[in-house]
Length: 169
Image (tube, rainbow, N blue to C red; front, side, top):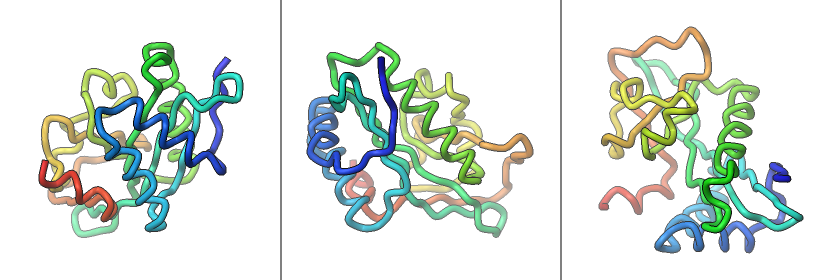
Protein backbone atom coordinates (compact mmCIF):
# COMPACT_ATOMS: atom_id res chain seq x y z
CA UNK A 1 0.00 0.00 0.00
CA UNK A 2 1.21 3.50 -0.84
CA UNK A 3 0.84 6.35 1.63
CA UNK A 4 0.90 9.94 0.34
CA UNK A 5 1.66 12.70 2.83
CA UNK A 6 3.28 16.09 3.12
CA UNK A 7 7.03 15.79 3.52
CA UNK A 8 8.47 16.65 6.90
CA UNK A 9 12.17 16.14 7.51
CA UNK A 10 12.53 13.87 4.47
CA UNK A 11 15.25 15.88 2.71
CA UNK A 12 17.82 13.10 2.28
CA UNK A 13 15.21 10.59 1.12
CA UNK A 14 13.73 13.11 -1.34
CA UNK A 15 17.20 13.84 -2.75
CA UNK A 16 17.82 10.10 -3.18
CA UNK A 17 14.52 9.66 -5.07
CA UNK A 18 15.28 12.47 -7.54
CA UNK A 19 18.88 11.36 -8.06
CA UNK A 20 17.67 7.84 -8.85
CA UNK A 21 14.75 8.98 -11.04
CA UNK A 22 16.72 11.40 -13.25
CA UNK A 23 20.01 11.28 -15.14
CA UNK A 24 21.43 14.24 -13.21
CA UNK A 25 21.18 15.76 -9.75
CA UNK A 26 19.57 18.95 -11.14
CA UNK A 27 16.08 18.04 -9.92
CA UNK A 28 17.36 17.20 -6.43
CA UNK A 29 19.21 20.51 -6.35
CA UNK A 30 16.08 22.32 -7.60
CA UNK A 31 13.97 20.93 -4.74
CA UNK A 32 16.55 22.09 -2.20
CA UNK A 33 16.86 25.53 -3.82
CA UNK A 34 13.08 26.04 -3.91
CA UNK A 35 12.92 25.25 -0.20
CA UNK A 36 15.90 27.48 0.65
CA UNK A 37 14.40 30.37 -1.34
CA UNK A 38 11.01 30.05 0.36
CA UNK A 39 9.26 29.17 -2.92
CA UNK A 40 8.22 25.63 -1.98
CA UNK A 41 4.45 25.48 -1.45
CA UNK A 42 3.97 21.73 -1.09
CA UNK A 43 6.24 18.70 -1.01
CA UNK A 44 4.44 15.36 -1.11
CA UNK A 45 6.14 12.03 -0.51
CA UNK A 46 4.94 8.58 -1.48
CA UNK A 47 5.81 5.97 1.11
CA UNK A 48 5.78 2.20 0.89
CA UNK A 49 6.50 0.43 4.17
CA UNK A 50 7.80 3.74 5.57
CA UNK A 51 10.34 4.12 2.74
CA UNK A 52 10.22 7.18 0.48
CA UNK A 53 9.64 5.98 -3.08
CA UNK A 54 8.38 9.20 -4.70
CA UNK A 55 8.21 12.98 -4.36
CA UNK A 56 6.23 15.77 -6.00
CA UNK A 57 6.82 19.50 -5.61
CA UNK A 58 4.46 22.45 -6.02
CA UNK A 59 6.16 25.84 -6.01
CA UNK A 60 5.36 29.52 -6.25
CA UNK A 61 5.09 31.25 -9.58
CA UNK A 62 3.98 34.63 -10.86
CA UNK A 63 1.32 34.74 -13.53
CA UNK A 64 -1.01 37.31 -15.04
CA UNK A 65 -3.89 37.04 -17.45
CA UNK A 66 -5.28 40.02 -19.35
CA UNK A 67 -3.46 42.42 -17.04
CA UNK A 68 -4.67 40.88 -13.78
CA UNK A 69 -2.86 38.58 -11.32
CA UNK A 70 -3.55 34.91 -12.05
CA UNK A 71 -3.35 32.64 -9.00
CA UNK A 72 -1.32 29.72 -10.35
CA UNK A 73 1.20 27.26 -8.99
CA UNK A 74 3.99 25.25 -10.65
CA UNK A 75 4.21 21.46 -10.51
CA UNK A 76 7.58 19.77 -10.67
CA UNK A 77 9.78 18.07 -10.28
CA UNK A 78 8.03 14.78 -9.68
CA UNK A 79 10.23 11.74 -9.20
CA UNK A 80 9.62 8.07 -8.47
CA UNK A 81 12.28 5.44 -7.79
CA UNK A 82 12.90 3.51 -11.03
CA UNK A 83 11.87 0.18 -9.51
CA UNK A 84 8.54 1.72 -8.41
CA UNK A 85 7.66 3.44 -11.69
CA UNK A 86 4.61 2.30 -13.69
CA UNK A 87 2.92 1.12 -10.49
CA UNK A 88 0.59 4.07 -9.78
CA UNK A 89 2.92 6.04 -7.50
CA UNK A 90 3.20 9.03 -9.84
CA UNK A 91 -0.55 9.06 -10.43
CA UNK A 92 -1.25 8.98 -6.69
CA UNK A 93 1.13 11.91 -6.16
CA UNK A 94 -0.46 13.84 -9.04
CA UNK A 95 -4.01 13.30 -7.79
CA UNK A 96 -3.07 14.40 -4.26
CA UNK A 97 -1.28 17.51 -5.54
CA UNK A 98 -4.17 18.54 -7.80
CA UNK A 99 -6.66 18.08 -4.95
CA UNK A 100 -4.45 20.16 -2.62
CA UNK A 101 -4.07 23.00 -5.14
CA UNK A 102 -7.82 23.04 -5.80
CA UNK A 103 -8.55 23.08 -2.04
CA UNK A 104 -6.08 25.94 -1.57
CA UNK A 105 -7.93 28.03 -4.15
CA UNK A 106 -5.40 28.07 -6.99
CA UNK A 107 -6.87 28.83 -10.41
CA UNK A 108 -4.43 26.61 -12.33
CA UNK A 109 -1.31 24.46 -12.26
CA UNK A 110 1.49 24.83 -14.82
CA UNK A 111 4.08 22.19 -15.64
CA UNK A 112 6.63 21.09 -18.20
CA UNK A 113 6.25 17.45 -19.15
CA UNK A 114 5.10 14.76 -21.54
CA UNK A 115 1.60 15.63 -22.81
CA UNK A 116 0.84 11.92 -23.26
CA UNK A 117 1.34 11.35 -19.52
CA UNK A 118 -0.02 14.57 -18.03
CA UNK A 119 -2.98 14.79 -20.40
CA UNK A 120 -4.69 12.03 -18.41
CA UNK A 121 -4.90 14.45 -15.47
CA UNK A 122 -6.43 17.21 -17.61
CA UNK A 123 -3.27 19.18 -18.46
CA UNK A 124 -3.35 20.89 -21.85
CA UNK A 125 -0.65 22.32 -24.09
CA UNK A 126 -3.26 24.45 -25.88
CA UNK A 127 -4.51 26.11 -22.69
CA UNK A 128 -0.95 27.07 -21.71
CA UNK A 129 -0.15 28.76 -25.04
CA UNK A 130 -1.47 32.26 -24.19
CA UNK A 131 0.91 32.38 -21.20
CA UNK A 132 4.23 33.74 -22.44
CA UNK A 133 7.14 32.10 -20.64
CA UNK A 134 10.80 31.22 -21.21
CA UNK A 135 9.63 27.60 -21.00
CA UNK A 136 7.11 27.68 -23.85
CA UNK A 137 7.45 24.47 -25.84
CA UNK A 138 5.48 21.39 -26.75
CA UNK A 139 5.82 20.41 -23.06
CA UNK A 140 4.43 23.66 -21.53
CA UNK A 141 1.04 22.73 -20.05
CA UNK A 142 -1.76 24.12 -17.91
CA UNK A 143 -4.48 22.50 -15.83
CA UNK A 144 -7.37 24.87 -15.03
CA UNK A 145 -8.75 24.10 -11.58
CA UNK A 146 -12.13 25.76 -11.95
CA UNK A 147 -14.89 25.25 -14.47
CA UNK A 148 -15.07 28.94 -15.35
CA UNK A 149 -11.56 29.14 -16.87
CA UNK A 150 -11.44 31.29 -20.01
CA UNK A 151 -8.36 31.49 -22.23
CA UNK A 152 -6.85 34.96 -21.82
CA UNK A 153 -5.91 37.12 -24.79
CA UNK A 154 -2.63 38.18 -23.22
CA UNK A 155 -0.87 36.40 -20.36
CA UNK A 156 2.47 35.50 -18.84
CA UNK A 157 3.81 33.02 -16.33
CA UNK A 158 7.16 32.90 -14.56
CA UNK A 159 8.54 30.10 -12.46
CA UNK A 160 10.45 30.73 -9.23
CA UNK A 161 14.05 31.93 -9.66
CA UNK A 162 15.47 28.46 -8.93
CA UNK A 163 14.18 27.27 -12.33
CA UNK A 164 16.51 29.68 -14.17
CA UNK A 165 19.08 26.88 -14.49
CA UNK A 166 16.79 25.25 -17.09
CA UNK A 167 16.46 28.34 -19.31
CA UNK A 168 19.68 27.67 -21.23
CA UNK A 169 18.89 24.03 -22.00
